[in-house]
Image (cartoon, rainbow, N blue to C red; front, top):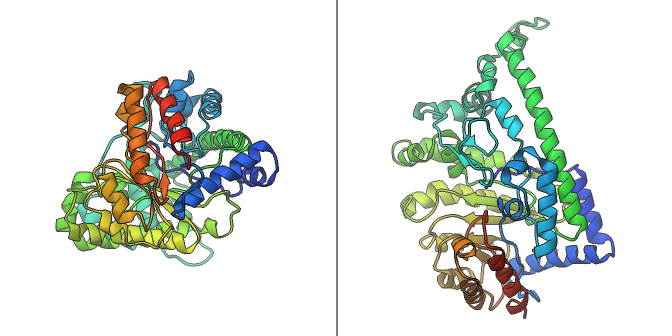
Length: 436
């Protein structure tokens, strides 16, 4: 799944969404009704029907004659597949991520991911991108990260993660007398100019991907499909583990660099909070931020460590969003049976929690009066199970989670592949058995 989705508050996507919600056409009524279904469930009410909001990865492309490779290189083909999928299955929100440019990643020589369509790749066309964990920051560089985050990103992280931009590594600013151009010297050095030229090429490719994303989102909004979320973030601990130190090194840092790690997590919480200020003014159709939780599952750390360096900075992000009238959508990954009490420590009716693997009855008991819950239907049933197994498991989840409200239907993970008949069975069961 691509997790760093970006939204431009000035784009026509938002304008179209707002207009569609106000315009009294059948599609506009569907748009507004679908938003209300999710809003009611988030507020712990029982909507007239359980909202159906599965997280989609490569599924729409693979099922409708396209591929994830097209989502990175052939936007018209990928867009056509998306439109066909949503028109056929009628989910209550769009959850596909924005198009990412494979060409831009080629130009940057991205080292963190491999992806379908990259020259020399072994990733098949139907697969989403694959993450390759590297250690882009050494353990002794925490002080530099904390002292000058922008400088560290410019001179260390970007050249390491994107070798085509290594010319940024030597940019330095030194104090000098006024009217002297010496402070600009590192900017017009040959290696820096080469990096700037490459950045311009990358920007052009990314802009094309963003335009295609906006266009298909406009079309889906006009068809009556609102977005499930309009922003994205990560638990600060996961940012360190995903992008800087790698998982294993970050787990070691919990013991050997605990104070520096905690300070870095707090700083990254503040940086993200600053980036979400557009929610205060942008006319968005919904206000929700998606958080995939990568490393907080059972067994990754002790309860004390989880509270201090994982939950505390994540909750800081969540509370800042809630104060802005934004709903955090917390997408837990892995087993989450031992974390439920901490998850309950949030304001009532302001958070959505998705689960991959949890005792769902216990989750409902602990969180049912506090937050909406979602997830837990195994995606392997959609790909390898029978139609009846899908129906039975969908009904079981409804029976456990729906009473009293606060339930949004989703699978336990992002769907890349599924049998057509199993997918139909899941949707049909929600639309019939999931009614009041």
